Length: 343
Image 1: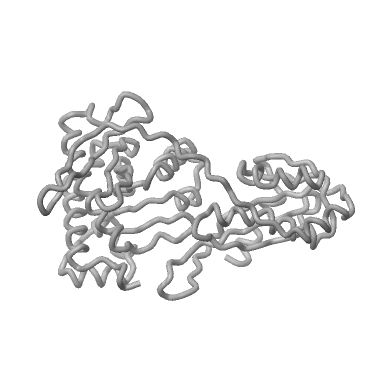
Image 2: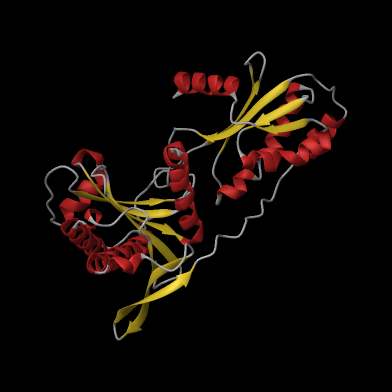
C-alpha cells in the first residue's frame, strides 16, 4: 500500500548507506558468521547482522530479525550444503545485496532513475528486499527501509572498528553478542556498544484444527496394510492474488502409497499470518485425505520432525504406526513428477 512505502528521502539515505558499504567492502575481512546486533530505534527489537561475500560470489548485508531470525541463521549454517532454499525463505530478514543490473526488477530501476543515481558493472547495483516466512522476497515497506538504513550505517561503524580490533566480534560465549544500541540525543541518535545474551526463541505452540466428523468416521474405517509416505513442502511457484499484495509460496501436503508409488492425496495450503497458523491445518487436511481414501493405513512415514509432532496425536488416536525417515523414495519420485509436469 502506498502509505507504507518509503519516501524518496528515506530511499536516498538507504542508497547512500549501501554505496558506502560497497566502497569499504567489509566482506574482505568479515566472515558471514561474525554476527552483531542492531536495535531498532522504533520498536526496540533487535536484528542480527551478517556480512556476506567472503568467497566473492554474493555481496550482501543481511539482518536476521529477532531471536527467530538469529537461530534460523545458525540452523542454516549447521545444515551447510544440506540446507535448501526453503530454509532461507523461512527466516525473517531484511537484505541489501549488490547485483547485476538484469537481476533488478523494473520498480528497482525506476527508483534508481528517479533518485538520479548511477551504477555500472557487475554486482554493483543495490537491491533491497524483505524476507517474510513463506513469502516471496519483496520490496521494503517504510519502517523496514528505515531500520535497514540504521543497520547499514552501524555495519559501517562495526566493520571499520573490527578491522582494527579483531576481538571486537569475539564475545565470551556463543549466546552473547555485541549490540549497537541507540539513545535519543536532540534530533538524532547516539549509538553505543553493549554485550547481550540472546537465548533461543521459546517453542511456539501450534493450535491444531480438526475435522471432527471425518476423524469420527475414520475411527470405524477399515484398517489397511498399506504404508503411506507423507511430506509437507514449499512449492517453487510464486503466487500473487492481488497486484498490490505480497506474493507467497504455496505449500503442499502430499500423500503417496509406498509400494505402488501412487499419489493418494494432495492439498495446497497458503501461508497464513504466520507459518505456525498454516502448520496447524496439516492434521485436518491429512484426516480429510485419509477419509477420502476410506481406510486407516498400517504405517505412515514422514521426513520432518514437524510432521512427526503434528501427526503423532492422530497415530495415537487412530492406531497406526508413525515413523520418521529421511528416505521417502516413492514420495520423492512423485514430487519430481509433479514439479516436471506443473512447474
